[in-house]
Image 1 (cartoon, one colour):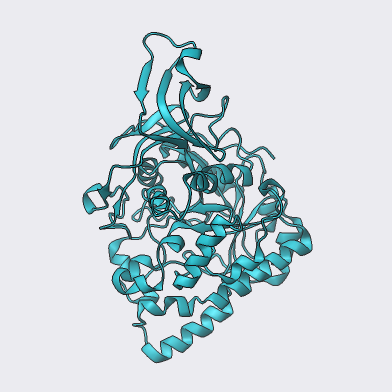
Image 2: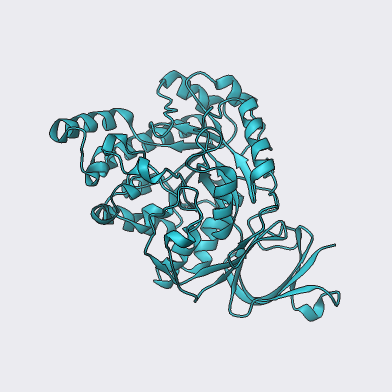
Length: 447
């Protein structure tokens, strides 16, 4: 039996911060408390965590790891290496790959790829289309994280724009519908206006005017309307506007809410004043918008109107990102830097450390009913992250692990540093050393 004792850590869990020891036996958290009260063999490995924070492993509910079909940008092996270095122990991957993950058979192929290649735990969304309702209804809730619905076209163009089909999806789907919400007609109209003014070479600072606040709110409002009409479980991804905060309520506990929301770290970190410096590297869909919108999203996290903080990790090559506006894909790599960027907001006293753990670790487990993960509890899987809160480092080409080789955070200095990442009790990341022969487990759901 493999055992590890983490000694004298500051554990941040379930709204509390306290000093304690933690015992790992094989894949599980065996005991939390004083080492003197535990039955510990003499030869056990002891990790001195004095001065370190111990949190549950981050669960990222929205990534694009690009496999199969787009592996020149990233792949499951390369991006889970980066994720482990960032303290992420579980991910949920999107269906806009090649081929698209819109059948149960394609989903099975992705799970096989992850079983062979993923260093961390995994699950995959089944994508909804205008013509695959039968496949959506075949999905097994205990085995699949959710159904992904594009209400606005983005990379891979899986737009569902048939209202009859949309209503059928909302009427009959019993699983979580995770929705990308942007109104396509507004975007097309705005695109044509700016194309007539600038031609193909539209300045990147116009991106939030093309994929506008109005486009987001109209689409999100429509999704909420359908969810309420059919009593559907709706999770709106990558919220980006102040207006959308009106659509959510914190009156019920998370596990009782039918309509929930996610924000991504780039919408909490950047605003439209950053386009001049960062250019296409911060081109995302939905677009990064005004400082007012960013501040409203920060407030939405604090007030529990927003339930999850994730990444929408979506790597592209530097060459692809250097293209003109309409030929430059949206998205960027984030999993290696999402936790430390959020902890930087803790250093700035924008969030408490407990709130960050709630939004990045606990709430994904609650919202998706993930079995035995997301918390530091005896009997739960030992998915854990040790963080040094005061060990500054600067993001550079030399320490970026993404296959695409770049980051929108290049040149940024973070005060916190991920020290170790445990996946099912195994140390997968250890001060820059990655255990590349370890493989994560498929997530299971209590539904």
